[in-house]
Image 1 (cartoon, rainbow, N blue to C red):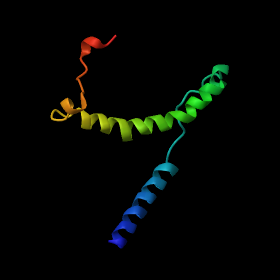
Image 2 (image 1 turned 120 degrees about the horizontal axis):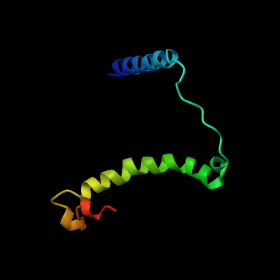
Image 3 (image 1 turned 90 degrees about the vertical axis):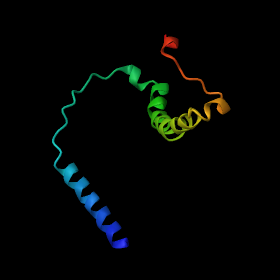
Length: 87
């Protein structure tokens, strides 16, 4: 068990190393710097966004999945969102 786990981790690490070392230059186009990107609230948003994204996918989406089950929706008071309420 330990040997196969070690072999799997080594193979994954070697594959990642080959992919990183064989990557070419990125085709991204540099854009002009704008002073709005240095606003303190924008910088705070850049730092907070990964935490919010992670919380949404690991906490709130599974929670919504549980409370929206057909047999639990009446207990939790969940109502299906219809397309007519979209603005």
